[in-house]
Image (cartoon, rainbow, N blue to C red; front, side, top):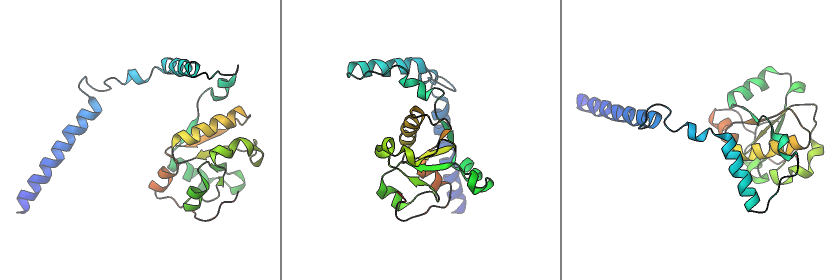
Amino acid sequence: MIRRSLKRGLGVARTAARIARGLVEGPGGPGYEVGEYEDFERIRQEAADQDRAEGVSAVQGEHDAIEGGTRELSAEELRILLEVELSEDHPQLLDVRSKPAWKAAHIPGALNIPLDALGSALTELTQKRAIILYGESDTQSIDASYLLKKAGFSDVASLAGGIDSWVGAGNEVAEGPSKT
């Protein structure tokens, strides 16, 4: 009976390995069609064309604020940074999720300014310290980084994977009322 279970388990493992190899390599070999997603100039042009089609126009220089993109830190990198740095040297942690999401769980020491209120709350932040943003997703923090960079904040980064990556890495979270 044990031998049969082991054989069955080994068969499942081999099948999973074959499937995984196919996902990574694809029918055309390793990296199949990856280049198709790396044509950033084409992607930017398509986005600009879509904006024009929808009647949205960019102000001259508006896209300069996001030059170089948004730097991302992993949950592990942020945890180490917070452990190693003196508290007065910590970056400003900014949670851009809604207040109910903040109350459920947030990174200790983080300030909560929901993304939709960020534009009118910039005075609560200092440009002299780095800012690390996080949200439910990378999209929220990258949108927030765009707003901050446009407002003159230069040292802005995003927690890759948002709050889920922080929790998933087993890091401490705080619960309770918002500080804002």
